[in-house]
Amino acid sequence: MSSESIDASGLAGRYAAALFELAEADKGLDRVVEDLGRLGAMIGSSDDLTRLVRSPVISRDDQTRGMTAIMEKAGMDALTQRFVGMVARNRRLFALTDMIAAFLALVAQRRGEVTADVTSAVELTDGEHKSLVAALKKAIGTKVAVSAQVDETLLGGLIVKVGSRMIDSSLSTKLQQLRLAMKGIG
Image (cartoon, rainbow, N blue to C red; front, side, top):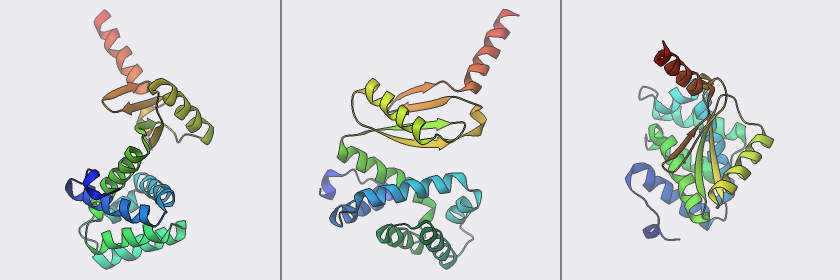
């Protein structure tokens, strides 16, 4: 796939397109997808890692060393490590989460998948994840890639976004709706 057929707009899109082409040429697309999915989840769940990625005060060398240590400890693929290392050396770690999202979107587009952003109050188990993917595939009629995040403020339930559609079955939203309905009565 050439870069002309990949939407490579903006900083994150250009980096994602470059990584996509490298991973595809290396026949390591699945490994990089798995690594970046794990790395994105790690960044989303760790305030310290988020600070490392976003802070302009932390030196380029410290960011590079920190990210390298984390990826080695996690056993990530060499291509993923080289990519994130290069991003760190170029002082672009602040855009890493956007690069990950753009890369995963490119892979989903290539595979004919639709990406569903799922936010839950607790981390989904493997069984729940598989059930959710099956239900979404049945409802949408195409392959679905799930991007899962955890937001403890939801209290329970899920928020599912597919394209411009959103289904909010979270407990916090239901309580908010009940609160509004009760104000209307009294």
